[in-house]
Image 1 (cartoon, helix red, strand yellow):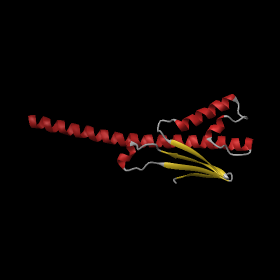
Image 2: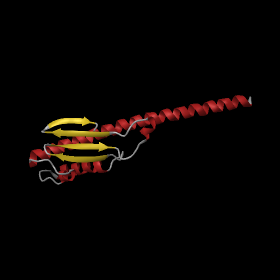
Image 3: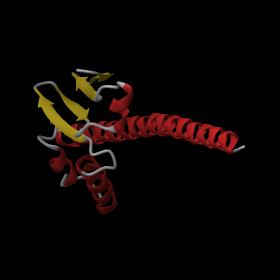
Image 4: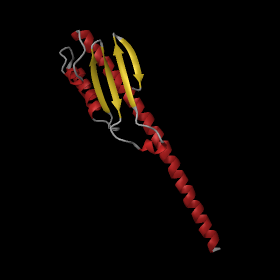
Length: 143
């Protein structure tokens, strides 16, 4: 009888460990998908703001901070852009956003700042690049 209770207890512990491991894998996949959605949204909004800057100023901004102080923006638009640029400097995933002014366009790179738990499952850090050259969207790729 005592042996039977021990076997049942061991089985319950094994099932609980298996559920914990599967839950962690599910959470990591969900977190990665949420990060990707966030990155794509932020980069597309930045690209729209950069295009608006180009249309109004006749040139690309030298930095993302220059977007915040454009003369053609209303106060509400300035606050919105300040919040968007703030998101590139501090976000839940600690991603690092870098804006590069090219001679005929721009590029925005996004990379993870630190290893994440997804590495436990063999996934590399993700780096994405969004580019626009001569008014044509190159889109996202991995450099």
